[in-house]
Length: 294
Image 1: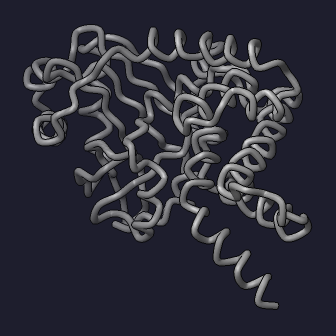
Image 2 (image 1 turned 120 degrees about the vertical axis):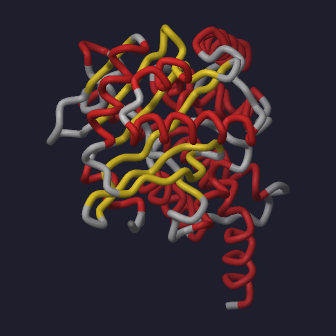
């Protein structure tokens, strides 16, 4: 019994890291929790007396579970790549600050993995995503990742390198000053509420891209250009009785409510003081799982 208690305590100590791995692999908070729970079941049924590094062992177990889930998604074709055939599929946002009823979720994005990066991870193949996430984000050696993938260390290294080039090419360096980003988001919110088209054009990059994921009930939308995005922002603001700046994946974002129900979660990519990207989750089913209250 003491051994089981000790093992459970060791697992709980590793849980935050395992959830972080699973979230980056799957882009879903619920599925990440399921993957971590499956790792616990695996641990409880295994003899790990010879395991020298339990944390590393559990990380590879979670990685394998997530890899299987990603491959299952691909085979079922239930999750189209973002922007494929006009569709948009955003990962679950992790909301922190006053709108969050589960501040422990902020651990998931302790190193500020933004929604824009998560969107790019969604475009990688399952093997590329595993190699990139485990090696580049969690420093897992290529030999250990290769064992999960059933590949050589050299080919696993190539997978990570290919994924890294795609990630770096699609996510140019954005502003990192949190205070400055908050000012930009506040300016966007004020201009939207006030219907100030000119002010929105000032805060939006001319080539801004806005992605909106409405789930199965509302058509997903991809918009480009400051004028189009500004017009939609003003229209949308009329429906949001309550909108506030919060942290979305560790960066200033906006949560909007109508009649006490979450209407949207907005994540911003800001470069040189202007908004270059908006990722907006409006899917009522997924919003309902985030624990947000107006």
